[in-house]
Amino acid sequence: MTDLGEATRPVIAESWRRSLAARVDPDRDEAPVVHAPDEVEDLRGAHPLAATVPLLKHTLSMDETIMIVTDTRGDILWCEGDNGVRHKAERVHLTEGSRWSEDVIGTNAMGTALATGKPVTVHSREHLVRTYHGWTCAASPIHDPHSGLLLGVVDVSGPLKTMHPAVAQLVSAAARLAEHHLRQFAPRRHVLTLNFLGGLHAELDGRPLPLTLRNAEVLTALALHPKGLTAEQLALLLYGERGNPTTVRAELHRLRAQLGDVLLTRPYRLDAVLRSDFLDVRTALRSGDAGQATRHYGGELLPRSDAPVVREERADLAAAVRKGVLSAGDVGSLLAFADSGEDAEVLERLHLLLPATDPRHALVSSRLRRALE
Image 1 (spheres, one colour):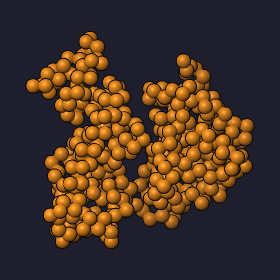
Image 2 (tube, rainbow, N blue to C red):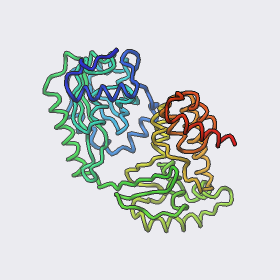
Image 3 (tube, helix red, strand yellow):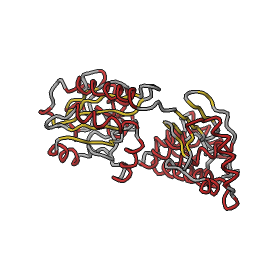
Image 4 (cartoon, rainbow, N blue to C red):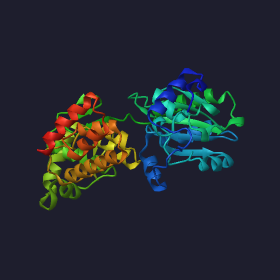
């Protein structure tokens, strides 16, 4: 049993509580590898912190340490530094393509910095997972200087005996340098929010976008194909074999009146920081996190849409989330999924798992009877 008394600093104790609530096992868990090398390359190319990596590498180059940059999910996209330390790090999945969020691997500098939005140093036994007690890590969040949105974290990690106390201050200073670099040299990026699960809501830089269903279908197709699509490809995805590229170009012209330079051409693609509930579900499913996928899953994707690209994605998401929650057998995830529709098998599983004394048991029983009628 892990004793919270071992976490003497409040920031660490609070992180341990969050990690244990997420069912991280201190004795058995290790950071999962969620991206193959070619996927990491694609993610790097599209990430706004790519422009800051040379600066961070130069600033944080030190003997017997490695410098790490993650995205907002805690996925390591860059790992640079001492070759000997890198080899040791690879053996414990402290390497590119692995995920270091608190809910996956427990208290660690990268994940805790993402969870709190503040610089964090985690020493040795402060790591919840015992595999990492030989390491000390210091991490600091990096924000978009224009929008204030979190972009990821920069971290310096090393074996316990090699880390100097001043490293934490240097990492925080490097994060501020990265933000200054983005302010000076990176163009201001728009933020496009697409929440299409169970409904239709979109925002551009915090301003609601009045979209038609066809607008939302176009944006869904572009969000699912970040490298871009031609009018011919979009016509097939939106209308099937009867699709007409001329019709699609007219739709895109009307949509661009609302989006401005967020909608690029040749090929058609989105140039914005994209926040999307259906993409969040996709990402969680890809990493095998059924609980996280269910939390993001607010219902079917654009329920009224008949566009082939939406129908296919809708079916894939629903089937994958359903399979994940049924396999996990977690009451919280099952309840969350049950809220998105009357699924008899899910309700039956809940009926078996919930004690008869639980107030939710009667509600589930009533819903199950209706689903079976």
